[in-house]
Amino acid sequence: MNNFIQDFFERSLDENNIKNEYYTKYSVKKGLRNEDGTGVLVGLTKISDVVGYKKEGDKKVDDYGQLYYRGINVKDIVKNKKEKHRYLFEEVCFLILFGYLPNKYELKRFKTILSEHYELPTHYLEANILGFPARNLMNKLQQEVLMLYNYDKDADNIGIEETLQKGINLIAKIPSIVCYTYQTKVHYFDEQSLIIHHINKDYSIAELILSLLRSDGKFTKKEAEILDIALVLHVDHGGGNNSTFTNVVISSTGTDIYSAVSGAIGSLKGPRHGGANLAVKQQMDEVIKDIGVKASDEEIQDIVCRILDKNYNDNSGLIYGIGHAVYTLSDPRSEILAEECEELAIEKGRKDEFDFYQRFSKIAVEEIYKRKGIRVSTNVDFYSGLVYDMLGIPSDLYTLFFVIGRIVGWIAHNIENKLYSNRIIRPATQYVGGIKEYKDIEER
Image (cartoon, rainbow, N blue to C red; front, side):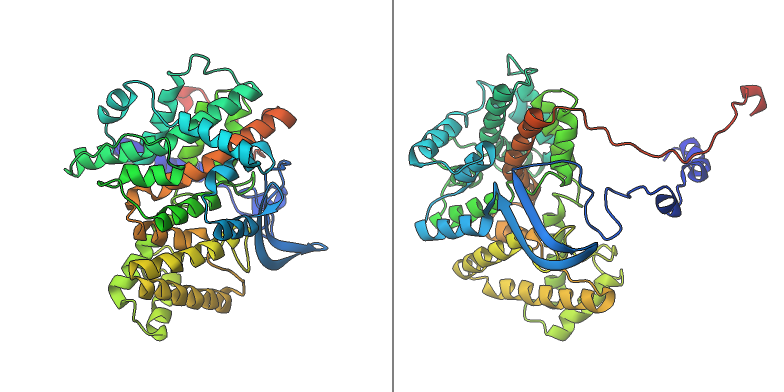
């Protein structure tokens, strides 16, 4: 930092200090959270419901987690897939966007509409992706979404049907943009061969992703099915998560869908939100490197304690992938993904690694309860990084895959708020800085 800036900054610390007790004094919520950890209600939605606890009177009571898409339990959706052996992401997209499960004809038409939008505009790949490589792919994706604004002749039209059409176009195009920006990045900055495959419109989105990422374009049905499930589990998580709320706040001003989605991507980039799955993988890689997957429970216990004591990994005191802002006794997404992860681990010959993850999580949950007296569980991020790694997906793409799934929810909430609220979202803040007299510059 520049020395002058450093001096100004240090002088400003007292001026910018807001005491914690002010939040109680003025009855202001800190981070839009109530004192018992529950979220402050800021809107209504019919899109999804996240259930992680019960309220008995004024008391918050821990409960087993449930996630509902348009009122349908996600576990039931996934169970149906396992019985029918088919891909679900496109079907769940339809459910989230339109509010009901499609029949066979509707689903076929919707899949066709999506696949017809896979292709990027003419010369877009050469002009905007290959010609402008970037080291950070989340920032690059924001740029590409904003770039698509320039290819839309009616970009500022925020009508309901127009927003839906533009949203479907983004849902279909972002997977190929993600894959192509990654291939460009590793070519220019990591000196690897440039691999650009043509888009196959007959593929599902999960199949399309794997075909564009792999040098030979090949994948197994099991691999595509598990990636499909991972995307389904990231489609939506209520209107209160940071990126969805960001998207709605931005769109409430009346701006275009490209600006709203770009802002949501910026929000998801943070390690406290979408970037958490990468933090989990890095944490677990370090643990396994130090003690190995055959480590005893005592060795795992020691590592867990060191993490909580801020003496391991990034010294944050956080065990990434354990605990959630809403879920308490269980995260249903983690339960589903753990089951899929175990099947993939067996296929990939990495069952010992999966078993280590399970032992580690059990010990971590028990230690947190012993120290803090709170019930926590693994969250979806705990297993998603391991799943992606077993699928051969580079860590650069973990958070971008979150975008591929979550953009469906962003579009749905954007439309819902246009339909039923259509007001600018503007939270108030309490001023606590006091009143001061202006001093002439000669007297300062």
